[in-house]
Image (cartoon, rainbow, N blue to C red):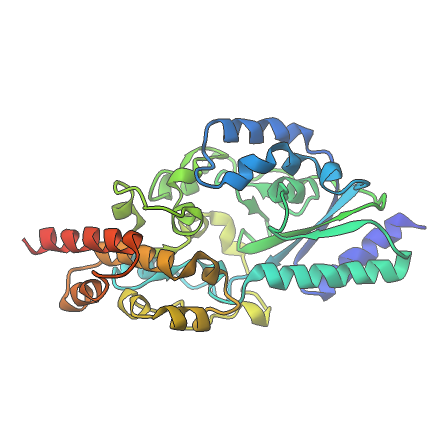
Length: 350
């Protein structure tokens, strides 16, 4: 088999499936394993117990899938539009949802396309060992994508590309075929520290060092319990995820809107207000967000996040009335954040 020719066809097939970047790396992540161990030792993973539970497995693809020789890394743009988002973040009545979460769950989209890519390869080579990943198994996807030459790790710890910025999602295929590996991409952040300086909670404690326990994306998505009170005012109106470090990154001047229909905005999540989203019943939440990544946090945490946003909103009769409507919610978690928000408005009114 001419593996170099096959690698070239894999890139072509990936592009046909809608991926903007396809690269191939070896499966050796030993250079990154120590950094992962240090991050876990510091406890910066917070309540993400699965990070510690899988430990070094993330850095050992050939242990996760015996026989793995190479990893195909793919990236796909997800931003439906690239308009200036700072006014939305400054409008305390708006609910800010991270761009990646406004359409269909990207995990489902990417996995389906990666499986189609595997089918194309198998039609060429016959059966081969492989596994499709998109946050579905322990993997160091940014490290793999950087090794495959599809970008470099930025100081905010996300992958960056010279021609696509960072508004993209990643997926991988572990394979048993000895394809030629691509050269890693060079780093191009230079002395820039805009992503570090803009972080509302100072979660980026230094270049390439993220304390997830302070990260708004972690707090509004992965964190299951009460949000630390001292961090709530810093969250502002960000109710699911946070894009600030990406919005500030100069490389995103080169980003392009996605052509993927599944990533188009649903339920007006790029324009919704805190009050209107807070009024959704649990059944409305489940129905409206069917197929959305937001649905996995559940209605309880959705209300928790919105209550924080309402506590940070400009005081108004509508905001206070919305909070009062949830004062007796069955969830103690929701009630705690509602009470905190109402206290905030009492101080403002005083």
